[in-house]
Image (cartoon, rainbow, N blue to C red; front, top):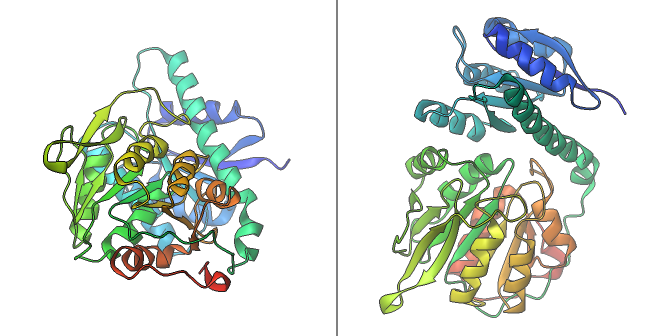
Length: 360
């Protein structure tokens, strides 16, 4: 196996050393450059063409997001992993970086034990590098995937709610979907993005600024209204419940993670199927793993509708691939058409798609 080449960027010499040592402990990985001056990063990355760049969010001269934007401007395709502090400002800038195409982010360890800090950093890095390797392994699939996928039989009901699930690459995908939903969408939309606690307030705020629909972070006992997009709070599961006068409310729980995730798409889908039955639309976007597949199985058993993102455009074709391979997707759609597909299925007449053009 060819070594996975990493460029480490941080203005702190101590943390650069910690990063280098953590990467060195990951099999088949090597640090090809360690950079403390953010002004030299883009030229060096363009020269070395590494597999991954780790970027500190907060650096003098050029911040991490400034470096990312310059890489985007030069169309440098190297993947970027942001290194963030757990602060309000850090969350806001990290959210912006994810929306602008950073592969993912990890938190700087803040414990007092150096050995524990190195261990937690290594584990976080290894998980993200595994996800990136998985994404790279599907490159040929993405470029050659058949767009004319025969779908499962279409549902008999117009959806009364939408659940969107995503993970790695999700913030960028959501920024391309949510602002393009119809401002007159007559149903609530529930979004489950795999993300730690403290990062969903900034993500919902950014999406709200760009959208006609109201986008907000989930709160316990929140009463749901049509035309709202409710984002599951980071670190907690989002459960839907039917209360007085048939209102749907949200319950946030710290139940155990599912598929190693909290919030989990399956957790929300189970409760949504209990309330809406087959009158529910599930949309599974980019992400690593299988979260969402079990929930979509429940929904399909009730004749509900499932849309999966096409491989082209997925940061990681894991979650949607799992749904497609299980034969659960009514339609397989490119990211650029996900919003229009939701608008059509929710607002238009119930119709059977031509099986020759189910994917687009």
